[in-house]
Length: 185
Image 1 (cartoon, rainbow, N blue to C red):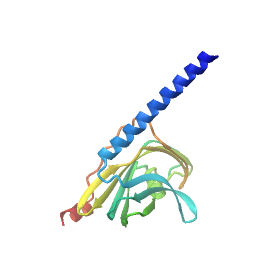
Image 2 (spheres, one colour):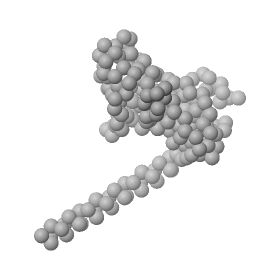
Image 3 (cartoon, rainbow, N blue to C red):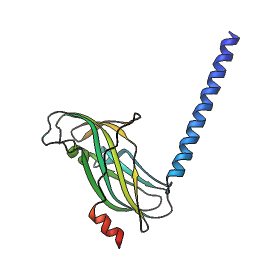
């Protein structure tokens, strides 16, 4: 009995140590790779128009204003029936709004995902890859957001989960002409 408690204690201590090292490495890597570690864009839910909507949440904990230009989405592993259009598997949502320091701006992604999936009338699921383009001062940046597996029923989201397995990244188109012209000013 004492040996089993001892072995269980050792296993718990070892597992706690491994988890602490993993969390520390993730935070360290995230801070090194991110020039604006106070700016935290992510995919999540927000209450828009009286219902919960799948949204891009632009949380600005950075000390400067951030101009959000657009988000480009890509769908992989699409499973859908009863589509009213051919799926393009990609779409762009123009944001063109300033996010003040300490503010959070929710941007609904339901429509752009629905159109990229071919406007399915029933349940559909896919893997969502996304790229956010934004500006701090006069300098432009691109940030890939977490890959998510989403399930929707028309325009309504039923489930969102972080995708852990490796998904082949889709080729990203060049910046839109509006962005390029704004960059040269």
